[in-house]
Amino acid sequence: MKQCHDRTRNQGSAIWIFGMLLLAWSLPLMAAELDRVVAVVNDGVVLRSELDNQIREIRARAAGQANGRLPPDDVLERQVLEQMIQKEIQIQLATRTGIKVSDDAVNQAIAGIARRNNMRLEDFIAAVEAQGLSYQALREDIRDDISIDQLRQREIARKIVVTDREIANQLETLEGLDDTENGAEDKKMMVSETRARHILMRPSVVMDEAKIRTTLADVRSQLVAGADFAELAKQYSEDPTADQGGELGWLPRGATVPEFQQVMDALEPGQVSEPFRSRFGWHLVQVLERRQRDATDEALREQARQLVFQRKLEEATAAWVRRLREEAYVEIRLDPAS
Image 1 (cartoon, rainbow, N blue to C red):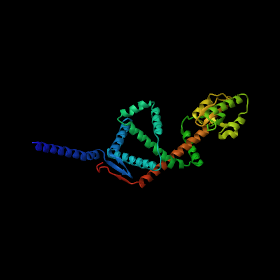
Image 2: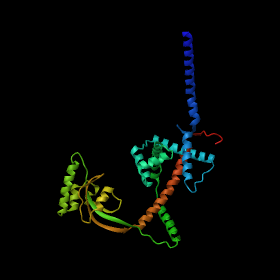
Image 3: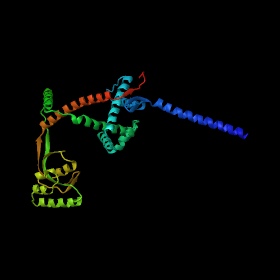
Image 4: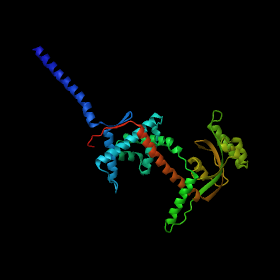
């Protein structure tokens, strides 16, 4: 009787083990069916789930637009897959060439997106997840985008040269467009500028921050009492402008770091600031005078330069992406019916 019981138990165990083995074998097959490779890109792959997610996001964006018409499903699928292949090639190149994007950079980018949409960060995250999207996946997408942007800056943007002749030609085009506008008035661009000078001291092993503040407070007392700013700048300042008496020339708004601009804006002509800190060190700044200047010609020239630069950047980027695509090993594994 005991032998029969043991045999039955052994048979049950064997059936259970066999069943578990069948399940273990079937899981990879089920996973492969649910999420298979649709493209091999060098030593990377694009998965079916990734392609489907991308198509789903594109459809959702198109649904929210008045003219959001999309091509037929099979055409859309191949177009999106090609975009993903090109992106994967660029990400691989960025990784191989040592480009790394920190979490801080990703955090700043996401905070910027939330700010441009007039949302708090937590509300933005909630909105992303409410659409059925993964916030973590969004972070990785943004990390990839920043990585590709840094790669393009290095490989393309820094090598683009805009000549004076190209700027002049673009200016002629802009002027022709202005002439065709009925009733167009000449618009002047006035900029506020401040002429200032400063003394900069940087913390070191010999001179810590407390000593610097004490020294600059003493220098300020001398200046208020009538001492020559230029002479004291030559004596104390560690900025390259020291030899010019600390002269910074005429500064348009935004030409300095925010903390420097804020202190400078609060001063009347002739006033000397209290010692203050910026990322460069400790400063004293004196405002000499202010003016409004017509910067229309400069603004138009910069607009022309940017238009030429963007046009050349787009052309160079398209050629660069085509070359990378031709040099890469790509095997597309979509169903024939797709």
